[in-house]
Amino acid sequence: NRLYPVVYFVGITGNKTIRELASKIDREINDNTLPPMILAFLPGKDTATIKKQIADLDSKIRVRKGFRLRAIAGFREEAPVALLLSLTPETFGTCILTDGFITGDQVKKMINGNSKEILKRTLVIIDAPCHGSFYEGNGNLHIQLRERDIQHEYRVMEGNGGEEWAVKSLDEIMKFTAKRFHK
Image (cartoon, rainbow, N blue to C red; front, side, top):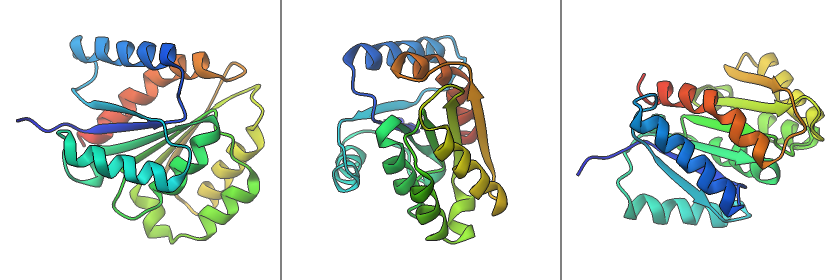
């Protein structure tokens, strides 16, 4: 009856991409490169639906309790939803934003609407493609977090973005997230 840390993914919807990502992480778990963890791919498109899906899964699967052992990863259009959910106090220890479609206005509204203490509890990892469409929003988020002295990771990787790019870029991020689980 062992309990496990969990990573909730929102915005990755292609079955091929989900299988590829899950297989890649499973191989790393089997090779002891990553510790055991649960991956949950959520199909919801809005905050309320995703909150309900997370609550339903938490009651049905063997998830370890505590925000430090929970991460949420938002991809493209769902990145702002993941960021918004991560700003709920004591909910997620890590928020991963990959190729996020985040606008400057969204960033200001979310960051300015929360206290520094709430923002400090969740590590935000911004993973942006150097030729992606929303470099401005990702850069604005980085600047807002830096100006408020909030710990975060901002990584710009070669490429145009997309699901294939996201799968390649998540290797290092998943290892970093796993270390946060077991701090």
